[in-house]
Image (cartoon, rainbow, N blue to C red; front, top):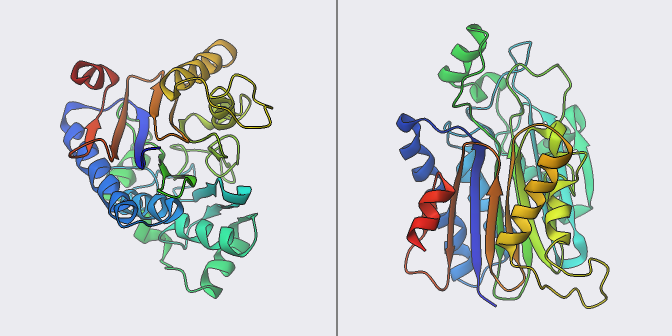
Length: 306
C-alpha cells in the first residue's frame, strides 16, 4: 500500500493562457493534502484541505469563481465520502458558504445526510462554518461571461480529490459551482454519492463534467466497481488497475449518453488512474514513491513522462 493523493481541476478545454493557473492551483491543492498525509493524517482531512485550496482559486468552478446561473446568481454543491463505515456528507444549492466542502465534512461527522439551500446554510452557521455574502463568490471573469451571455470554450469546471492514508482509509470529495446559465434550482451530479464521488474498501473516485451525463451512468460508483473482477465479491478484491478502470468507465459513458466527463480513481493499494473525453483535464498527484508532485493538463503529457 502506498499513501497517495490525486486532485482534478475539471474535465474541460484549457486554453494556453490558463494552463499555468490550472497547474499551479492543482499543485497547491495536492501539497496541502499531502502535508496532512505525510504527517500520518487522515485521508478525509487531506481531501478537505486540498479542495479548500481549489475552492479559494478563481481558476476553478467551485466557490470563488463559480459560474452564474440564468438569473446571475451563484449556487454551490459539494460532497465528501470515506471508505471507513461508508460515511458521507453533502450540500447543494448554497450561496452563503465560503467552503461547501467543509460543511459537507461537518455533516459527515454528525450524520450522513444531504442538506440543501437554506437548511444547509443554517446547519453551516450553527456549526461555525465560514459564511459569506453571495456576491463575494462572483469573480469579475464569471460576471463578464454572464453579462455577455456566452459559454466560453475554456470554461471553468468542477474540482475534486481522492486520497489514501497510511491506515488504509480512502476518501473522495467533489465541489462545484454548476454550469453556466443553468436553470434556477438545477443541481448536478457533484453532491450525489455514486455519481459525483464514491469511496469504499476497494477505491475512491471523484468525477467532473456534464452532470446530466454523469448521473444516469452513476459514473463514480461504476469506476470503483470496475476495480474488482467481481463487484459483489466478499473480500473486495481489486484486480483491475485504476487506469484501466477509469478508461472503461468513461468509455461506458460515451457509449450510452452524450456529454463530456472525466474521473480520477485511486485503489486501496495507492495506484492511480484518470480518464476523460473532453479536450483536457487538469490533474495533479503525489505519493510516497515520488520525490515531488506531478501535474498535467493533458494525458498525453503524462504518458510522455512515464
